Length: 407
Ligand code: PMP
Image 1 (spheres, rainbow, N blue to C red):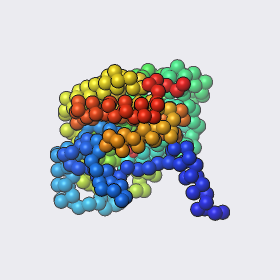
Image 2: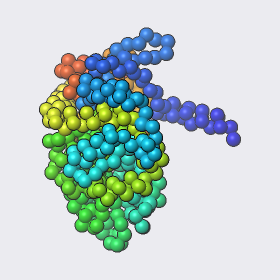
Image 3: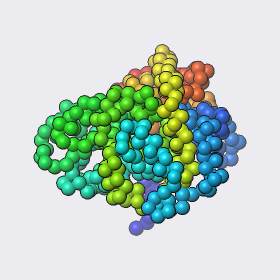
Image 4: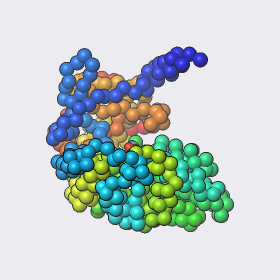
């Protein structure tokens, strides 16, 4: 086989469809967020305003978080020194896990190298090891959950997005004796809609299923202590296993689950993606610990974040831009075509020094391509005014529709 021709052929098709991924090379500058420096080959670096960061609360540059990381590097060095089992468990990992368990009101927590790995490993392990397990998965679940479910080899059933009635139908038809897991998210990252957690959990529990909730886009940002939408909705105890990330609202990197002591011990003891990889550097755990403590103790951060998101949505709608009906801090603006979405993103950058990455298939279904805006507490009114004017210019230049749905 001509491997090079195969790879280049595929890449060429992605380019033709406008779906070829071009990474913006950024230099982040402490204290400057949401500004960052964009680097491109053959060009002088220039400052841009970032409107698509998942550092939702700008904790990645918070002085206390940066200091905690620096102090831990100074004291302990760069790496953890091994897998968790073989010399790589640090006091900081243990402290972080205790903090996370407490945040979610669970007996125990387990930290992984990323949120992706946490989902993949946990679902794969449970699905593979529970005898004849059936996994019920929301149609819009993240790729990491889908990967875990697929790799587990367990029977997979998809229920319609955010539809407890469909889940009920599927569960009613199943053998009551088989173990089951219902896996879903709280905030869906590309649409910004929220699941009916309590209802889904009630349906699952009526049929003897475990509930598995991904709060990656909610932890730190919802609930009195920032434990996520389950805390906000008063249903923490209905979620059997919660999964989240240290990389978004907490601004660092890593993922975790929190659950009963036995569940966590089971994944710790049997999960390949946990056991056979070097643990996170102690400095990462130190920064994450500082961030979790800060964020959970500062409800005003969440209030400000929600206010910024609401203001942005209002301003976009008032300007006639097709803001999609999100109920959260995620603000998608509908384009509906991959090539146009890429052009819109390019124009924002070239003409207006605004960076928003285009979101295309397979991240979202074809025909629903969009610009996904993520306001943070550090985006000011002037940033918003510039963004709205820039989007209006781009919409006019490209002749884009003001309707937030496919024709
Ligand atoms: N779950 C969801 C819903 C996500 O959107 C993501 C990543 N964006 C992940 C899990 C993976 O988290 P991480 O980035 O920490 O690997």
